[in-house]
Length: 374
Ligand code: MG
Image (cartoon, rainbow, N blue to C red; front, side, top):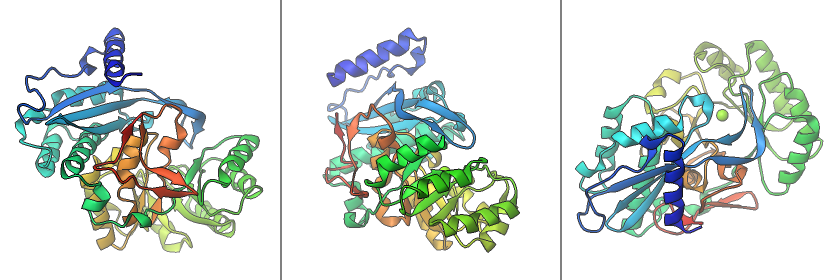
């Protein structure tokens, strides 16, 4: 469909649904004439190829808001994805974006000032802030004529492998999904945290010997059972464990990390840069996601902070289009583990960007995020 028509029709659909506040904000600044930034945004429901189940929820689609920022005739793309368990919604994201006035900033190069300003508007709203950050980074790269990984000095051949996630399901479905993806990926991520953990691992192991990462999504309750399970997982080729206990349970995480033969990575327990000192000593590493941390600017600071603390760095994503997945993938040469498969789980992607070939991420060579609008 023609892109302009698509945006128009999306906005019309929103207005018809009673979400008029989500419509693009009128602006008196004309791109290409004033040199000021103009932002547009519209909701976009991401359709999942398979129903997705983790320890605490199950769903078949994910709400999302697409953002475009235009500056001197150049468009930067960004995205806010809102898995329901994080408490954000299309309404909250659009409500936040409606408050944002980029007209007071001279150019998208003022990233530090703009992101500081966004934090003065609210304490939360990380996905909405990430969408703005992403679009600004895309603009900066496009205006400089270089991909972000190049601007930051990363070697794209070190982008490495991404894991592909297998959600909690029946043994038949898990077996089928594993068969489908074992040939395409070099590492799989397995959702655990329910009573079916052993079944999940044994079913996958009946199909493939690929290394596995597991994510308990805060589902484990008992630290002694958790340690036993980690030894079982290590024997079955698991290489890391993500978020074993409830995010507030720092003491048990520290107890487990001290004894675990596998790295224990904090996901839900770490949202932003300021959370890292709080989990010091309790985990072996952190999982950085743009929708948690407000975007690439803060993600890069978190990588530096994690390294200074001797922590491993994992990069993750939500269910997202290739826009946000390609954005976080720009940082992949600086990470130990990547779990950037959100775009591979949906059937209605809007972009072509980072692609996975033989299990390895290939970063696009185009400027900014390097996206091609489909
Ligand atoms: Mg996780």
